[in-house]
Image (cartoon, rainbow, N blue to C red; front, side, top):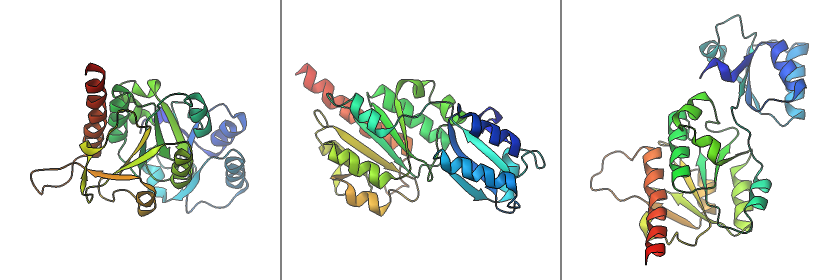
Length: 251
């Protein structure tokens, strides 16, 4: 992660939190830091502003910033402005606005590649969990080749609540699950306001999200080789929806 997306040191993080003009992804605090006044102030300000903070091993902080400079706290910033789900739904209430939900995808390059495919496929929004997975950082920004500036990106503290809200607004939820018996091309995407869930490459989609899904689809393969890279899998499914729409318009 580029240092341009990081603020470190107690005073610098407090100043940024108090100023309130920066988009935070999360704040990392060393698990062995003393609970001093400034650390407590950072925690209080983060809670007040709805910013996630988590305790991590000092080695994690040292891998991002040279030991001694971070003072036990690093804030990860976002290069983009996130949009609230309610604002997204209001903006798109009179049109189809398909979205992609990433559940636990932890590789920044994959997230950037998925965003790039989303924009090319006409997806209107991408939903990222605040805690489990990658948020928008400089690597995602670079890998997306500028696509992050052409799609609404929604950060949520609860994917379960987010999916329930989408379903209340007439979305059909599709989960990419290699255990499914239904193939991805058997879904009629043409006039479907859909939310496609893509899971982490090894863990897959969490059970709670699978239970909320209306459809579970797989990408059939000719061999038993390990599953596709998540960004490749997302592109395959998304561009089936594009193929179907072109077929409809040209028929």
